Length: 155
Image (cartoon, rainbow, N blue to C red; front, side, top):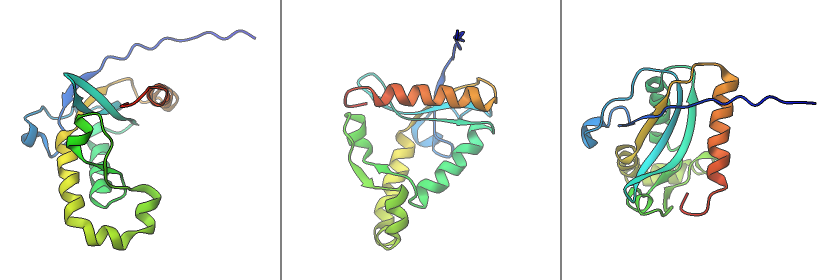
């Protein structure tokens, strides 16, 4: 069996500010396009990737969903200062932990929301318009994340 590899060239644009936080960091707003995006932090004169994502809707619309989930405690929240030094210090652990510990979230909500705002302000977003074909989007995202998981710390 013979397989033919297809090369897809991806051109990243950015950095952009997190929607709603652009004025806090003087970055341009994310373009209203679908595609692949990177959530990054400034790190040693460059950028450290925190996560990659995809959307067939506009990136701005997808980020409204992300913002809501951050503010509701559904996502991990990091200490932005530590992240920019290459460290991972969680202020709040989202996902399953968040579902099982709603009372703790409510007790610590003001501290967590303050950290969310700092994290969203600190993110530098890069986007690439590669169309909306699910298979292409998913393969690009998976390739990026697989590569990141194979990297040594602090990635």
